[in-house]
Each structure stands twice: as structure tokens, then as C-alpha cells.
Image (cartoon, rainbow, N blue to C red):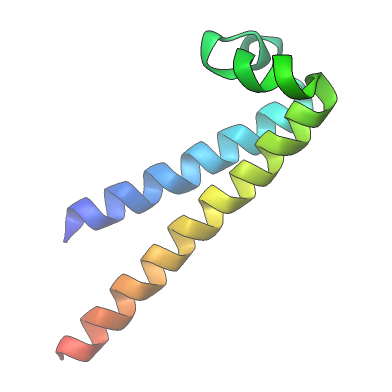
Length: 77
């Protein structure tokens, strides 16, 4: 059961990182090899919006998984 909490935490932390990178326009984030595809195709400002929305989605997924695990644990009792 602890693995579920670790995965949920990773989702939330990655979401927070993505949002912070888009808000503060971190150079290292947007010049990294992995983000260059989005930056080249959308441009820097739209890439920032994309990563902010991606971060919100990651946080929402982490919260959803947390709530569904809590619900399944409550059903077991």
C-alpha cells in the first residue's frame, strides 16, 4: 500500500515542478532536451501554458488516485 502513496506523491511533485517552471519561466526547464519538442512546435509562451496545464493535470491525477485508494480501503473495512 505504501507504493500507492509514493506514486501519488510523484504525480503531485512533478505537477508542482511543471507549474513552477511555467510560472517562473525557468531557462533550464525549457532548454532541456525533453521539452524542446514542445517549445519548438508551440513557442515558448504557449509551451509555458502547456506545461502549466500539464502540471494541473498531474496534480489532479495524484489527488484522484489518492481518493480512489482511500475509497477502496474504506470499502474493505
